Image (cartoon, rainbow, N blue to C red):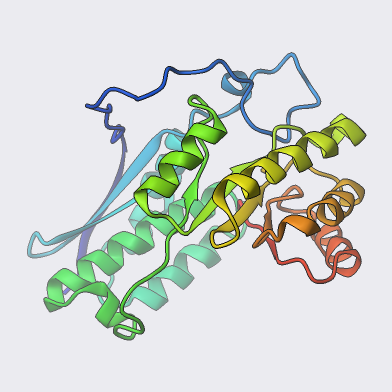
Length: 270
C-alpha cells in the first residue's frame, strides 16, 4: 500500500474545563525560564504560542493515520513544504525507512529543534496508519505488552491555583509521583536557591515519604547553579532534576554529571 498524501494543519484541541475550580485562581509570575534574565519579555511575548499541529498521512485506499505535535506554522511548513513531497508514493509500511528519509533530508537545516517536531508528528501518523492497515494496535507492532501498567506522574505546570492546592489535588487523584517547577533562573543567585529549597521542602513535607518528587528547572540554570541546587536538594530525596541547562549545552551536561554524582539528571527539550 502506497502513501497518497501527507498534510499538516494548525488545530486547536484545548478543552475548556466544565467544572468549577474548588479554589480561586492566584496571580503568579510563572515558573523559571531561560528568558528570565530579561524582564522586559513576559512569557507571552517571547514564546511561540506553541500552536498544535495535526499531521494526517493517507494511504491509497483512504485509510489515514494521525499524529500531533507543537510549534505551529514553522512545523506545518516543514511537513507540507518538504516532507510531504518526499513521502508521497512511498510504502506505508516502511516506517523505519521514512523516519530515516526525514532525518537525512532535514540535515541541511538541522534535524533537532523544529524539524524534530515535524518528524515526530509524521512518524506517529505513519505508525497509526500502519496499525490501522494491519488491524493491530501499535503497541503490538512495537514488540507487544511488556508490563500490565505504566506509572504516571502529575506536573504542576499550571501555577494558577498554587502549588500546595495542586499537589493536594494530585494526591487526591491517587498519583504516587509529582513534579514541581522552580520559580527562579540562575540569575537569582543564593536567594533563588533558598526559594527553590523552600519550594521542594514544602512539597516533600506535604506529599510525605511514599510519593516520588521531581524538580524541573526548564532550561534556566547554569552549571554552577545546577550543582549547588542539586546539593541543596539532597535531603529531600528528589527522583530527578530536569531540564537544568539549555538543551544544546552538551559540555555543560557533562560537567554537571561529573560534579553532581548520585543525583538522577533528566533533560531534553529538542
